[in-house]
Length: 199
Length: 199
DNA sequence: AATGTCAATTGACACGATGTCAAGAAACAT
DNA sequence: ATGTTTCTTGACATCGTGTCAATTGACATT
Image (tube, rainbow over all chains, first blue to last red; front, side, top):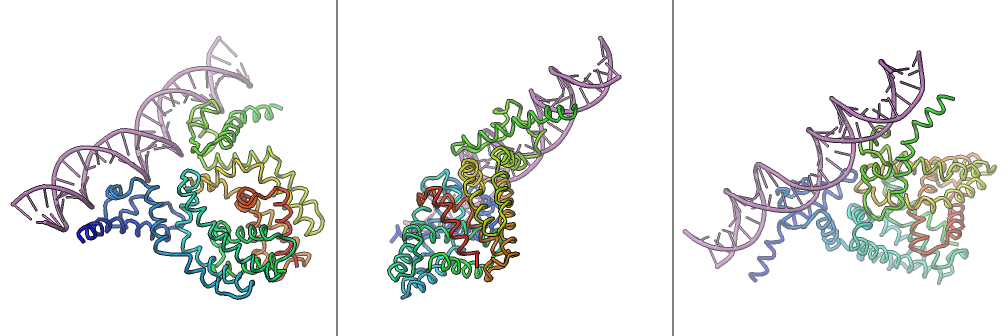
């Protein structure tokens, strides 16, 4: 009991820092986030952040883990697994994942950027993306089973294509660079996926 | 004649700087490239670099242009401009650009990896990608003029889609992560572009 | 040979960001 | 009341970009 309270108290400021970082990551899409910004948002001094995290990288990765705990992709994609037909499942999967991307985008950016210099970050990111690929694979397999898959692509190729179509990079390019509304993104990507994959 | 020699002499150091930057970008093993590194490689002082380029952004952008010149991207894409029909031009553009990507991948990787932490690198990269977008735009405009463009997409949307389909990230994902051969990449991307865009 | 021009050098400095350190204050459990 | 932990404050080292002024060296012009 004592230990529990102590660790809870101990984590209070740490949590405030993580939440502050999270909020800044989500709000701030262009500007760089400085340690001083995070500290101010958390209501502590810049130096105090270093009492909880070794450095900036450590903090950013800890934040991604924190968000991982708070938001799960699993719940989001449950709907797609419920769909009966292949095409229905394709649509539901694109909608579920496509609408999840903006929620993790702030974090995704950090992980993608860190991948060159940080093996752990790269692995965490690859892990997540492989889970998405498995979702794509399940959709493609169902389509193939139903004979709905375009015959010029093998099922592996089709999985690769869908996975690539649904990459976070593509979402960034279309919504951030090209200025597409989120709704348009989901609709047009769904349309493209059907045109490419469904026979 | 005098002017020619003068401008040639004038550009000598500038060229050395560009070549040095290029070599560092290609050789780079994850380390960030500083102005001092470029200067040393070019055999001049750090400050002297600023006599030829306004700032780091300017230098990086100039380097990508220099590489484009030496690698002959213009010549490669000339073939696409020569094609008479819209579809022919689409195919030629994808072939020209798609086969150019692997040649600039060394530089591209560094610029893309640096984009989060390095505003200058991001700007240099964005500048080049906008040039590709213009190529996509020309192709789409021709298709639309011929009435070959699928009617569910506006020409701007179609340009965005083609541009995204041809992104370096997609090339990396398909050829590096999914293990596609370069030839398969070009063929399958061409196929996808036709399915999505041609009515 | 003297002159002027231009490129480059040298050393110094401002600026902004990360990260460290030491001394003291404040919170808080016992 | 006391002692421990957390946080604050102010100072400082470090690193990279970009700027500036004074100076050197090469070279073309006259």
